[in-house]
Amino acid sequence: MLRIAINGYGRIGRSLLRSIYESGYRQHFQVVAINELSDIDTMSYLTRYDTTHGRFPKPVSVDGSRLVIGEDVVQCFSEKDPANIDWQSLNIDLLLECSGSFSSRYDAQKYLDSGAPRLLLSQPASADVDATIVYGFNEKDISATHTIVSAASCTTNCVIPIFDALQSLCGLEHGTTQTIHSAMNDQPVIDAYHTKDLRLTRAALSSIIPVDTGLAKGIARLMPMLSGKIECNAVRVPTLNVSVIDMVVRTSTEVTVEQVNAALKEAAMGKYAGIVGFTQEPHASVDFNHDPRSVIIDGTQTKVVDGRMVKLLCWFDNEWGYANRMLDVASHWGAILERTSLTNE
Image 1 (cartoon, helix red, strand yellow):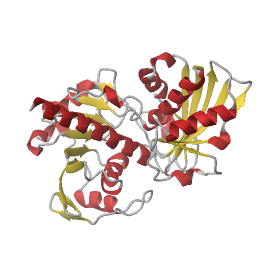
Image 2: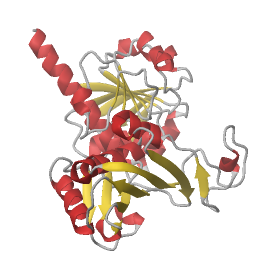
Image 3: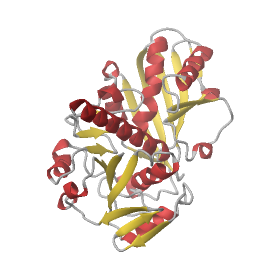
């Protein structure tokens, strides 16, 4: 069993903890500690009740500076600088970095220097980390010697399996993606100051707001043959959860709607089973709330123009799906470490 800690207990951090208890991961993980700037009573409250995902499946209470989850006890810290925590004394195997504040190897190294043996980042990272992993696509790239790994982004986890399937079917020449993403906690409820982006000073509930995205870089890193061939835009919309990517690609060979849908359905049932979904029902975004898959292709929206321009609509729960993929990566990493340990004995 992997002993883990969580740094940053926001939307992804709490989704990770909930998924461990709700999705069958508890047999693989023991959560030893959580570091979050908020007070522990608020942490307990936000664990028990969640507007998006419902009530927590286990009893949660507070015992001093510890969260008691069912029969499990989790030590909690409130350190702005996680380097001030003695991670080594907690005897953890892996730290899940979910604050979104550390994306370079230089910054992440602080965790290792304070005793964390390995770090899994919940966001895209600089190219100098050991690996960027989209589970189902390249998890075999993880090594027992790695110390800093990124689980990419929710959008990268969404598109890479689709590009992989299309590349095998008909080849890809170039394309664009438009991410239509639910509001996030870096947006204000009413107009307010924002340190980075003037558009993000605007009220999240009143507008569709263009935002920057690094998705094209993530695609190029994982599929170098598409470097410089895919451009990506994103907007935020006034919904709590579940996002969608509207994708248009130019293929190398001619295809039909039926061939594209058949290939994507095959990927959902084969190589990417449990990670990719395929549907031809008349869905709305709320239908995919709390869906653990990385992407669900809406086959009713597949279009082909002139044989080589393919348009797809791809749903994903940007919180729950991504949290489940992070835990898949962590579990796979843990299995590699266990096999290496047994081999060295």
